[in-house]
Image 1: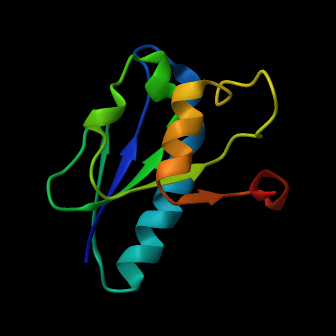
Image 2: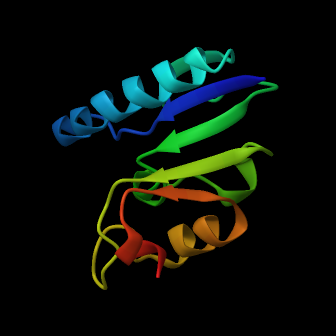
Image 3: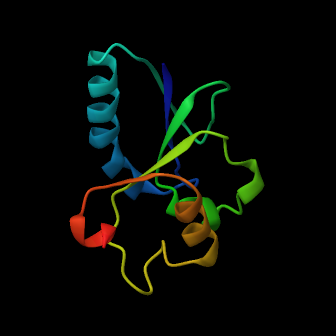
Length: 109
């Protein structure tokens, strides 16, 4: 299978570097399982299953929901609480339409 780790980062957003180690972990794990894996910032790859890091930034960047790749998994590393960046109708809709891999059991509830 082909996977593509997409790292969503608004221009000039320095805190996005926090995702790099988790992206490397997912990349290395999928590669060890025998999958072909690519990584890019703010870019999708045709014909891949996308693992999207920083999806909460898509709304800030004005990304149209209908332009999401057909096969996407959102990897959430943010606490899901009211008033947080993720708590926007667009992001809630994206999370509802695709699988979400999350770091926290509390978020899953």
